[in-house]
Image (cartoon, rainbow, N blue to C red; front, side):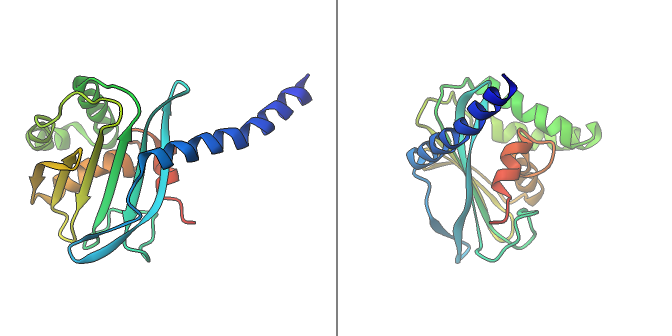
Length: 186
């Protein structure tokens, strides 16, 4: 019985990989783009699942030679794009962001960040399947947030930029599994 279960799991793994590849293809992420005059290329993409349901795909674009262990490197631009497969209420998105930030920062730091993060969150709307958010940090780590290709928020505050993109790219964020896949060196 154990051998049969293991065989089923081993046989299902390629199917799960194929399903993820199809989802990422559906997201149609850019293979490259220019930020601060520098070419960024697709480094990795992955699907975030929650309770066996695909929620969104995420793609990370950085300069080609940049090590990915810590992609939030001063002086280096990056682009993180999310493509959603499900409708999500804006309040749920904001709550999830604060939960992740609460795991990453001390309460005193969160208190200092709260007004900046709240200003960014004020631009959020409910998400529908097919929507996309893109967070771009330029070489000075100024932040541009786009919703369906329209800029809805920008800030020259590099601390806010690094903090917010860190929700996906730092330890103890929304999903360590997603972070590990996005920051894996090929």
